[in-house]
Amino acid sequence: MELFKCLFGVVLVFVSACDVTAQPYWTLPLQKHQPPLPSRLPQQPLKVPPPSAPSDKCQVGESEKIQCGTSDIAAEQCESINCCFDGQQCYYGKAVTVQCTRDGQFVVVVAQAATLPHISVDSVSLLETNNPSCTPVGVTSAFAIFQFPVTACGTTIKEEDGYVVYENHMSSSYEVGIGPRGSITRDSHFELLFQCRYSGATVEALVMEVNAVPPPVPVAAAGPLRAELRLGNGQCHSKGCVEEEAAYSSFYTPANYPITKMLREPVYVEVRILERSDPNIILTLEHCWATSTPNPHSLPQWDLLVDGCPYHDDRYITTVVPVDGSSGLPYPSHYKRFIIKLFTFVDQTTFTSQKDMVFIHCATAVCYPSRTNSCEQPCHRQRRAVAAVRKVSSNQRALVSSREVILIEQKTTSAPNTKSK
Image 1 (cartoon, rainbow, N blue to C red):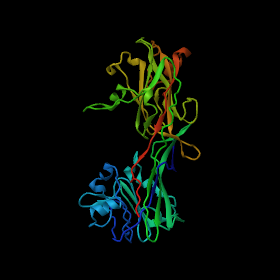
Image 2: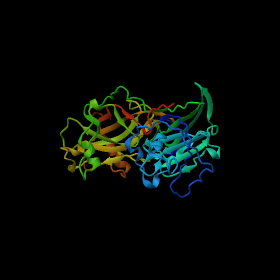
Image 3: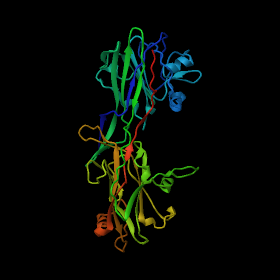
Image 4: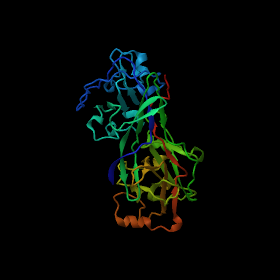
C-alpha cells in the first residue's frame, strides 16, 4: 500500500474579529525544538461577545495551556476574545481561535482536538507555504499557532459593505492508502477560511461552521435468503466489560439506518447462517470488502478480508473476532465476526474525498469438514487448504451486504455565530 499526503477540506469555519486597546501576548509551554517567538508581540484582539462554547473546550491540561492575552487580563475580557479563564490564567481552548489585531495581524490558534479524529497540528498549513514567515510561529503537541500580517501569505483583499476585508485559508494534510481497486483515508480533513474586517467606526465578528451533509435517504442492499450481514451496536455499561464482546450483544435494526459513524470509529460486523440447525457445517468468509455504493461490484473498493484473513496492506488491520462455545450461541460455527476502523473513499486522481457512504460486502460459503478439510481458515494456511475450502457448490455460497449506509460524520469545535458593532 502506497501512502501519500494530500490536502482537502470538509470542515469550513469563517471567522472575523478585531481589537481593543490593551496589548496582551501569548506564551507557549516549554517544548523541545520550539520555534522562536515573534520579535513583535501582537496587540489585543477586538472584543466580541463571549461564546457559549462546549463545556469541554476549556478542559486543557496544565502542561498544554498557552497564554492568551496579558497575565493580568480579567475573566470577562478573556472570554470576550474567545479564550478560557481558570481563575488565574487566560488560555486558548480546544478549538479554532482566530483573532485580528489593531496593527493588522492575523493570530490563528488551531487545537489538535478541534476535530474528531484529532488532527496532527504539524500537518496544518496556509496555502502559501513557500514563505518561511507563513509557517507556524509556535507548535506544541496540542496546538499550532500562526501569526502573520493581514497583507501577507496569500491573503486576498476586497471591500464589502464599507469594510476592508482580508481573507485567508489554511488546511491540513492527510494520509491516503492506495489499494488495487480503490483508495481510502481515516484522517480528519480540516479546512479553515478566516477573515479580518476593518472599518472606520464599526467591527463585525462572525463565526460560521459547515459540517457534513445530512444523512441521505436510506438505501437498502439486496442480501441472500440464507445468510445475513449485520452490525453490532452493544455498549459496555459495567466495570470489567469487554467492548468487543458487548458490541455483539445487540444489533442495529432497519429503523436505525442510515448509521452515522466517525472516521476510525470501530464498526462491528457479524455474518451468520440463517435457517440452518446442522451443528457440523461451518461458515467461511472467502472475501470481504467495502464499496461506496450498494452495488458490491462497483468501484472503488477496499479489501477487508482476503481468504478469511485481514487485508495486510491496510495500516488499520481488520480484527477477526473468534466465535466459539463461550459466545453462548447455539451454533458458533455458523457465525463470523470482525471489526474494521471506518474510512472514507478518496478519488485516486485528485486525492479528494469521493463518497461519504460505505457498504460492506462478504462472499460466504458453507463448508462441510472432512478428514482432508477442516474448514478452518488460518492465515498461515497452505494453498492446498485454500483450494479445499473453495470447492463448494454454488447453492452453498452467498453474497451478503450491509443493509444500508454508514454515513461518515466529522466533528469540529468552534464558537457559534456572533455579531458585534
